[in-house]
Length: 296
Image (cartoon, rainbow, N blue to C red; front, side, top):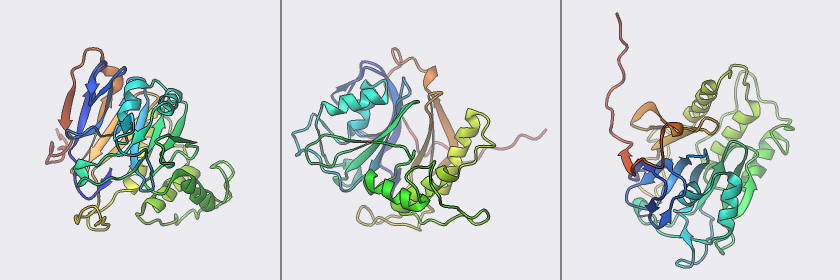
């Protein structure tokens, strides 16, 4: 999550049959919740459905007060009720979404788009028509960042790799000097596409190797505080407050924070969502030193 300030992020465990700001959960899930608000910006449910929420300024929702849910509730609605991406699309096609101020971001009304993924499919959901109904795009590139909309992101990717898909691109990147990208959402998107386009999986032998490769990609997108500002949001420098890597096949949810680079893991398989209690944990300020190496 890129922002110039913490936004009351906390790890949340939501059980089955729980009323979460008016949404009753059929399935339990874990994720990142923002204080007392309804906003879940990341999560994975007990069936391995993952939702990630990113900013999209050009979003156009249903008029305020006319939606079945607001744009901050899309992730929790999907996580609470969908076993698959297909089910998520069907659920969202039957409701309207409106917009609401984000209290943890100075009451700004910042639009969002949503990456929804399971072990078989990944899609991007956007709200652009002002009616509160979704546009659905196959996430064939395996990448989504903040602005622009996904159609424009695909056009950027096609120009970068000189092809319509990762499989038929013709671009040749230098072996000894990889292309440089800046930290704008547009170029972060291109950078991730380039990583997927050039990926060499010869060292990825296990799922653990795959998760480590994903963290290497996350590391490359880190923002050093003082190098980037969104002063229209807040005068403080941009930072990556928390980073997420999910393993949808094994239903593992990994995260770390800007103030604690230790990677923490939540094993969804270890949680009985029928009996677990609703709970939250602060993800920040829970460690102030590195682990010592034990020497005999």
